[in-house]
Image 1 (cartoon, rainbow, N blue to C red):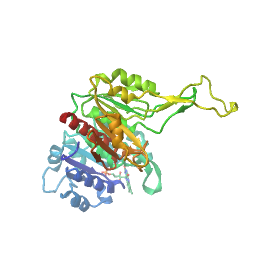
Image 2: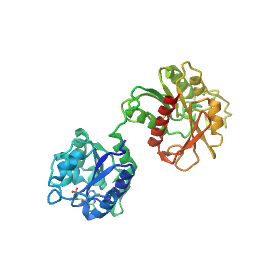
Image 3: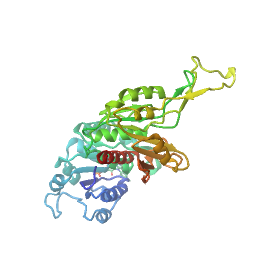
Image 4: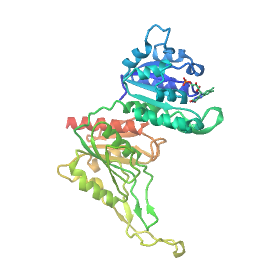
Length: 394
Ligand SMILES: Cc1cc2nc3c(=O)[nH]c(=O)nc-3n(C[C@H](O)[C@H](O)[C@H](O)COP(=O)(O)O)c2cc1C
């Protein structure tokens, strides 16, 4: 995590430079010490006084003539991490070439700290072979690139090239400071919505995207845990997580029940169907045959199966509620889990498919803790913090 770290924030000459002020503010909120380095062009877009007011220190704007005779080496050696946001095509090219003619690139080259680059530019500039090659080169150097997004660009254009969301940039900065407090832990996470086939073409499914489970798996892996993700959705694109891709509730049950006893913690974030069609037709159901009556039967209760294991892993259940979380405490008792994470999927930003979530923790003694609306990765971190604390207390 970036909390309390020394951060050099490099700002270059693009319209998105104004967003760097917000980023500086967010870093200060995380108790980081922030020193800003601005290129000459950046000063055309935003005044140094803004950063001075936010960070409490005058930004470095030049290699020569400041109080410090060698600002680039002082800052480069001081930094725990360097962020460049926004990063122009020009600065990216200078970095790729190691061309240290300004204070920012000189600082990066005078440092051994990890570097996070958030490019922002018009789509045409981003797609240029020169930019593509420069970005590839920076990746090969080990710089972390936070890809730009599709959105409104300068001059009214819309396309790929808008600066990534500041929260995504902060996540990337967190990622360069992994807390390895789960090193000795083996965790199994379930994710996604199961699909119960009606025929070879159609299924009964649900709206779960798998994002919450993916975040849980990713964060656990970053914190050093050995992770198995049993998922009915698209898995995260990262190494360090073992993936078992399943489709149906039966497949999820078989996978989880087959492996859960090897794990210290099982987190059931998947939305598993409660019912499945009693019969799966071998051929496609045809409109011409008239509306079918679909007979349903219960699916296996995956959580109950894990609960009955001996020894039983530490068990975290999820409850997707609609309208109110009042029933969550009763559900926690009924499910007999060590921690229940409940969310009202009808709350804006807390439902399926979104990148944020608003959850309530329900503990064994019936007490609860409501979290704010947070990015799913932050929710995941807080779930793991809570699991570690509860395991230690028990
Ligand atoms: C209005 C305006 C907006 C610009 N926006 C961007 C931008 O978003 N990204 C970019 O790579 N260059 C942009 N440029 C071009 C850069 O400012 C220019 O390449 C400059 O030399 C970058 O210098 P620096 O990387 O040292 O800050 C813009 C230029 C102007 C005039």
